[in-house]
Image 1: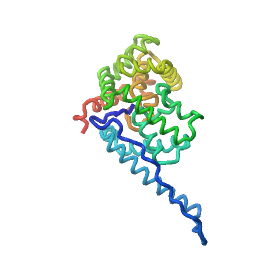
Image 2: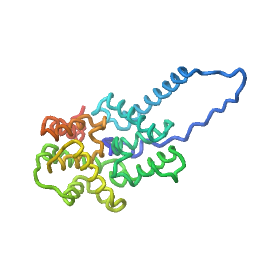
Image 3: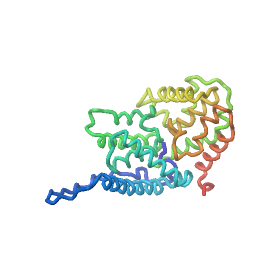
Image 4: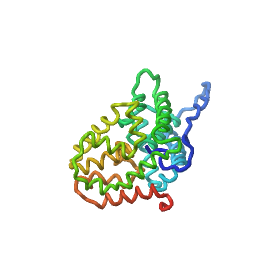
Length: 285
């Protein structure tokens, strides 16, 4: 929930999808201008490059702390991932991509498949919403309204959740050998982010069980076992989204699945330090 993620006092909704630009209608005349396929590809690359620069600037302006902690290459990687996901969703306009980018920043790079957010991400697969563009704009609007409910208009509740996770400590979570069942998992989620837990219980009863299923499947895929690692993966997915380990904006998290599988504590220490820099922006310069 790359919420107002770590935006401090920034506005709640930095992105308001602009109205589609008017179409320039050119009536055919003879002789007509012909563009060869290589020229068309070059033109398309130029348009994409300019759009990418605007998307990068948007991230660096409205998610400044997050961008500073992750670094410029991470922001560029996020925008590239947004383009790939946009192609999969048949998005073809800059406004649509900006809507998707915003959802990824608030909710994590895996937002479109994350069972926690079915309350709005299922819109992307609905046939009763006419076009891919209409679906992503509607999902964006629903996602921003949902964000206000779970994180607060300024994202403060999400920052508090990150602070609780940092206080718990990833190394301590991974080292906890106390068995954890479904009730224990629900208790952990409620402890870390009570507002989100309460909202999901009220509006999407299947959301938290769905997340538990996804986390369990991920652990099996990565051959990660043990109650401590189960707590670790669940806590990170709850606070940062199901694909936290793939998120360019969370660089230290990419090493955590392997670290959990092998018992390597170095990566956990680096991730703990990253959380502390989020919690204490004055130390993140």
